Length: 273
Image 1: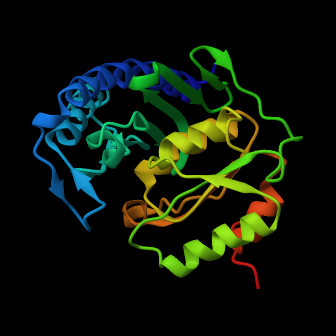
Image 2: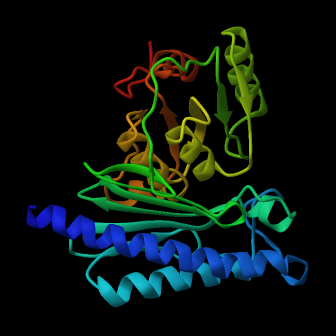
């Protein structure tokens, strides 16, 4: 094992441990969610609570204790630049809206980037007791079971996940749905992009597309999808670009062409003419 692989393995093990610990903390808040004070962020659909902040603080503290030179980007408290080449990218509770409304479709998402590439992805789903875990060159698992995507699944015989938010116009979302349905597909929206990308890695969804999404929502799932044999649209990770939104697309091998067409991009990530 090379020194780089060894460093990834050490962070991967820590990410799994922290994800489970953070999930327990978040689940405790979920079970007493009626007592939480809910605050509005960008718009009435974009909410946050003390649960999000305290779970992120827990993850920051645990990673900082072991890898103090690593960078850290969290949804609630932003980017802390490191000098090790590694950056943790975390959404403490992805799917806060389902969380506060009593639906189980939320998760803790942890990614680790090395030189801008997602080399670790761990997503914990406390309400379903599921742990998705993957690392570069080591495959992806769900509760220890290896994940491997099938090329026989397409948009026509499986379901595609779609995401939307206030950054995207209603007309553009309608066009995505129209094109997907016209192509023989169907769709679902669960309220957590990270969870739906994990579902792509598990073969539950054949793909996921959202025209505007943040790094903390997608990068953990991206690593899982790649390690399960799928494809993802690269996310810009240079400097401050990491903190900005971008189109997000992940797909199993049998859906790449169709979903790139619907998204209006090539499989190289370049907008189609």
